[in-house]
Image 1 (cartoon, helix red, strand yellow):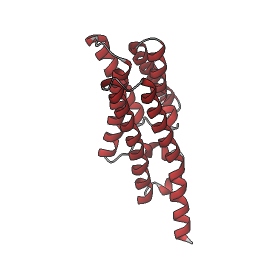
Image 2 (tube, one colour; image 1 turned 60 degrees about the vertical axis):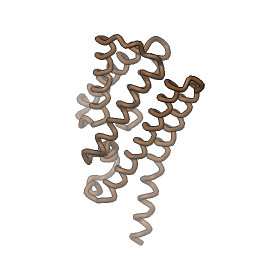
Image 3 (cartoon, one colour; image 1 turned 135 degrees about the vertical axis):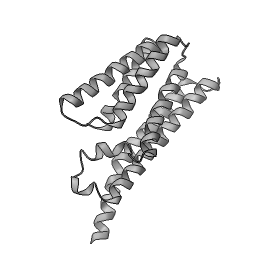
Image 4 (cartoon, helix red, strand yellow; image 1 turned 180 degrees about the horizontal axis):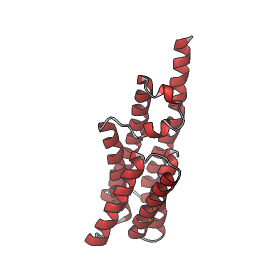
Length: 185
């Protein structure tokens, strides 16, 4: 499974939150997370840090919203979700298991997994995603606490950050591979 599919609960959250309500977005994302995990188990795939963190994040935010009845604004609930997403990635880096490594192992032959360059490449790609999520958090915070900033700037910053992380995740491994081949010859 790829990272974009793993991020689909966040897309479900955003669409349902905008079309209906923050609670609808949270519940939809929680259900999407459960469906992803069920799909992984049915296919015999290993459960990944991102999927487990996403399930925990949406379960906690849904429970908090249900019990605490906060008055979420669009930027506030997006901020909570994006802070949670950033935390998942930062924790994966802090424990020495960059979240991208689990996806890379699905595409890279096993003999390369033990190479330091494999681990380093995944640290760099995971850190790039962390920067993208930090940009999203900053944009959400600005949209919430600086009234002059329109929501479209928050959304634009989010799309630019995600687009940059996706591009880098595809570009950087090819660069590393070219460097290794050049060094070998």
